[in-house]
Image 1 (cartoon, rainbow, N blue to C red):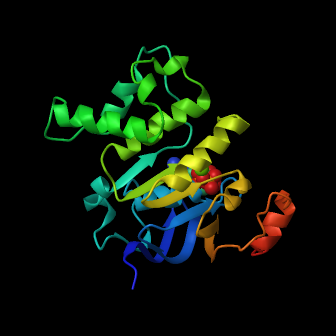
Image 2 (image 1 turned 90 degrees about the vertical axis):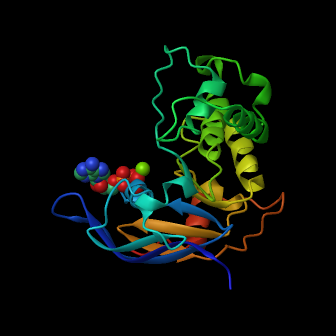
Length: 240
Ligand SMILES: Nc1ncnc2c1ncn2[C@@H]1O[C@H](COP(=O)(O)OP(=O)(O)O)[C@@H](O)[C@H]1O
Ligand SMILES: [Mg+2]
């Protein structure tokens, strides 16, 4: 039996009157790579915020390695959607990654913190740029820095909310390649359905309800060409 990293049972959530998420049941296994897709406003970001313990279920239960989300925050590294960073602020790459080492009881960074931050930068291919200012990087490079920050707490689970939204095509490719190589449980929200060709194990389609699909077994030969319609057909996005 594989370990269950995230378990969601009978989850319902509403901000106001109307349910945004309904009747969600899913287990995510350790070391799985799950893509989360679905229409704008479908509830993807809300679902992730519930897993992170930033929101509380209206009904139902979420467990991260058996713990309630608010007790499991150190197990999850996260990059939010639209990291609207104030680029006028002269932050350097290494400072951003060190933010991932901040702990409640500590007010300074140790040698170990700096060592881990540099290791994570190396892992995402950004070590040489550690002392650059964030504003001097491309969208793709910035996203790598945020991934390094998410990894800096040495989490068991990595959750990325639209990591390729502000990234050009080449940058997107290299981020997908990096994600493929990272060995941990990964949940990646994407507006870009091409992610389905990037080695994900399962796909969660969220539009108020969650529909899980196993890996698609698509023919991804160099000749194989997929347009969005074919991909959407392959995961039968006709739930509504
Ligand atoms: N803080 C909030 N208060 C009220 N409604 C919200 C809030 N955040 C999101 N919503 C609504 O919840 C729905 C799902 O939003 P979201 O989870 O951001 O969707 P997605 O990430 O799939 O685009 C949308 O209708 C959105 O308007
Ligand atoms: Mg969103």
